[in-house]
Image (tube, rainbow, N blue to C red; front, top):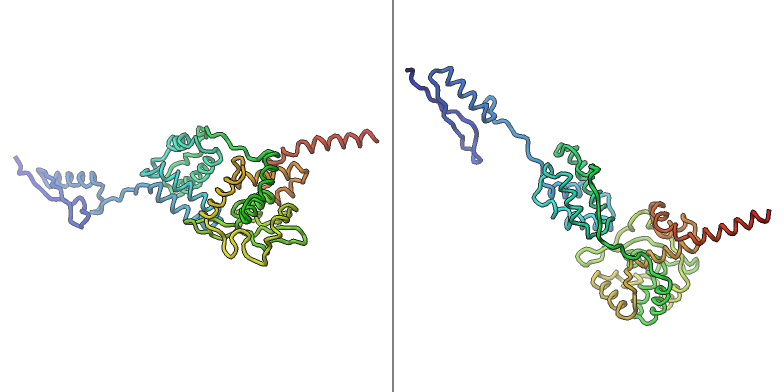
Amino acid sequence: MPKQLKERVQVGVEKKGKPIYKWVTGYSQQELFMNAAMLLQEYGLVHGQQKKEKPSSPYFKAYVERWFELYKEPKLRQTTKSSYLNLIKNHLIPHFKGMRLEEITTSTVQELFNAKSSMAKSTVRQMRIILHQVFDLAVEDEYMKRNPTDSKRLYISSDKVEKREALEDHEVKAIIRGIPCLKREDGMLLALLIFTGMRRGEALALRWEDIDWKKRLIAVKRAITYKDNRPVLGKTKSDAGNRLIPLDDQLAAILQPCRQLGGFIIGGSDPISETAFKRMWERIGKKINLYGATPHVFRHTYITLAASSGIDVKTLQSIAGHSDIKMTMDRYAHKRENNIIAAGGLISSVFRSM
């Protein structure tokens, strides 16, 4: 019987650079070479080099953070940036924790939507928009074969009861009657929110020189956001946020006695901190009944009342600071129904007089 031949073959390298060897045997040189070739093939080696495996896709956390930093953050205003970061850090990353892009499917996305059913639909829709953009990029980078948010199976359900968007007329009247009971600056803040429809950050960023007392106009030029309780002065939510708002007579009467040459209307030389605002809002709520209203509710109330007054939609869009007239039409145009009905009567009278 022929003598068995034995040869040591390198099949890899350890992390520290030490070669990895395996033994092959054969009863002839040809058999030895064939067995060595099969061993090399088994380990994916070609010409002594280990075949590189296709790297695994990145973890969702690292990828979405890089996407935001590289493609999204430079284009976003401060207010929108804070909203995106909140959704990414507090909702998306925790849900996809420890998952690589290649492991995410339509089912795992649907599980996210189901888990967030207690949140407003608009918030969950925003999460879907973010995920769609991230996964589109992942498909382009060849980390995913398809975008799981493209599936028609996906649906968003919400158990959350939508809050009332506008106060009733009698509630607005009661709140206005209570303004004189408040501390001077508290009353000015509440009046700004009621009589202008400005966003909270816009009202807190308003300066005395932004008011044109002769033309009775207020110029909205900037907004406040908060980072670690500190106010950050920046641009308004969109280009449409830079706008003019009519100065209401009741608001003028409240502000005029405190009128200054410059500075912030709320805060003086510097805008107030987030903690200071919360304390101010708590004081106001203890003094008068706000009927559960927030600054956002006062904004909706103002625009709703403006819509019902008969103002044309384009002017309403400008006052509200909406970048898209569709938003104005969808949310507030129906509030003009009574005016339209009344207009119908006037048009009919014209035809009857012909």
